Length: 248
Image 1 (tube, helix red, strand yellow):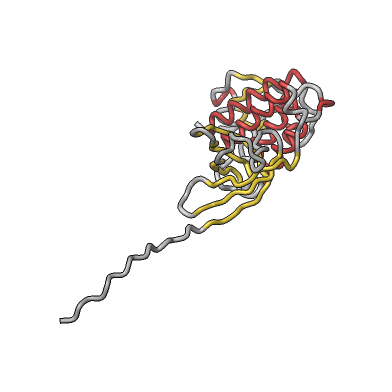
Image 2 (cartoon, rainbow, N blue to C red):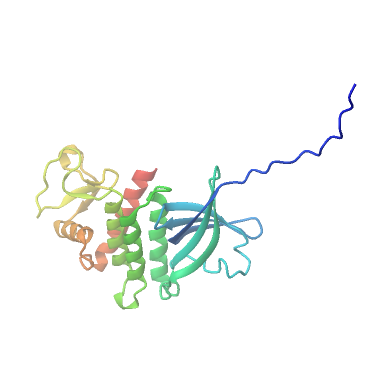
């Protein structure tokens, strides 16, 4: 009978996890502290739309992620691993600072509202070039101290955000029956339906004058100066209501 030789120690087979690196410009739309030193961040990226990532040790002093602030345009490096939902933020730097925006309360509040809109409507992992451009143009406009009251800029940007995601307000006809609305007539507008609702179809509590309707239409189409200061609050509330109706 032969004797078995000495047993060999078993070798652990290490399976490397496939990893890809993504470098892209991005805006920080949310930052949630986790544990003692980390953040979970939500980024609106140029390359891939909304992405979530863990920023390890980001709450400690570090040159690697020192620029992890909203409002500024960031340049980020992200590691993506197979079978893991969260990416890993490797590095973040400021590609385009917006210094006035982070020092003035009213523009900063307007920008914060715009970032919340994006967080609500932008689909995860989907590149949205028009929406990304609109948001950066809005933040640049809010960063310009010569432009005065930020509310009309926020309202104009909000209308374009709606258009970019396919929620543009219908202002020339009833959204339920298709009946045209005369240009010089006031009209009922229901944000839950995304536009005008004629009285035969039930109307709506909000009635907009014909001149305001024309200014909203012009702002949506690209006129940066169409909205007046007194229009802004109405329009911002409309944008809020349209987004709330679509994401609930």
